[in-house]
Image 1 (cartoon, one colour):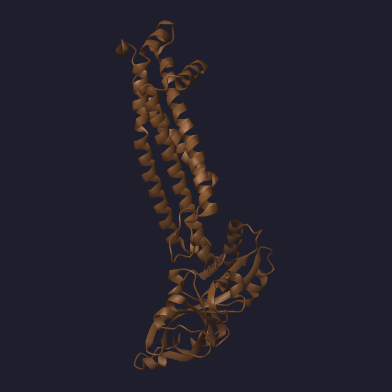
Image 2 (cartoon, helix red, strand yellow):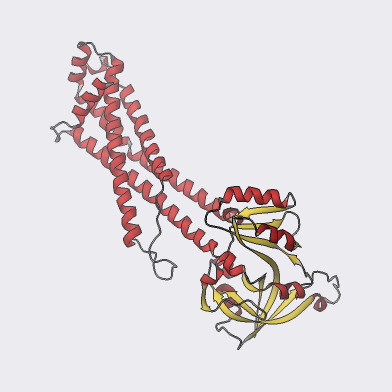
Length: 400
């Protein structure tokens, strides 16, 4: 293999750079460089977007969430919670009860999810970091509103100056003839507004757990246990241990599984984009096929000389296959370097902005080794296939 590589390298670095063959080779390299860099940048952009979205969810979703497999609620077992808190991997546990309630403020009405939490919830999830107006305060009658809920109610102030009426359905009520008796009524005050993610902001209001349990006739009942893990905890192993601990009647979901549908959509979009750009890269790589075909015709006298000297057709084909691989490798490496520089500049200086009104100023990006390997393999496979097709078309007799 050394002789075909030596000849291919001499062809590649030939001084006669003004020939049509060398111009086509340059065009082939340029197409591979642009395609490789674009593919790398696109994958980095999707990684950055995924990290940004995960950051939104991480302030509201816990590391682990325990729910009943059947039904929407279960009895709160404080002994189990106390036992779990002895685990080295667990930092805090918050019992949570969610109920759909009707809210009325002045002339506006809105149905929201009232999330009853205890005093440890802000530490378990970090929701207090997302409060941008007022303060995080959930002891009854105080509550923290999502900005979407506040907008639908026409609520623009925080504090105890304006009361919001809430109607909570009773879990034990069966009186359909008198629906007004199926609800408990109370008032709460918006002490703060939070902004996490649009789906959450238009849905949730966070208030006191015990008060919601009393109003819904569900004392001692919760919808979930939300768990925060320590920084050194191994999430997958801890999840398996929690599944064993709670048994088959409960589900234990990590943060990604709590938003499984959304992340599946994101991964599908990323895969489709990757395939589209790979197709574009494949199309742009057809210049390599033309370049190698032209080179075979240009070097026909060299081919005959090598053949007369005893080199068989298979070895001669390797010369041009190696030439294609050289062009592909140089294009891939150059594209990786240029794409990496673009990603680095975007990360450091925010060259491409998101526009006014977005949470972040510049488009987020992140490179990981998996994507680099994926890009390299994609380019090498495409280049190798095209080089093989071009080299296999070489016929000594046809060049006579």
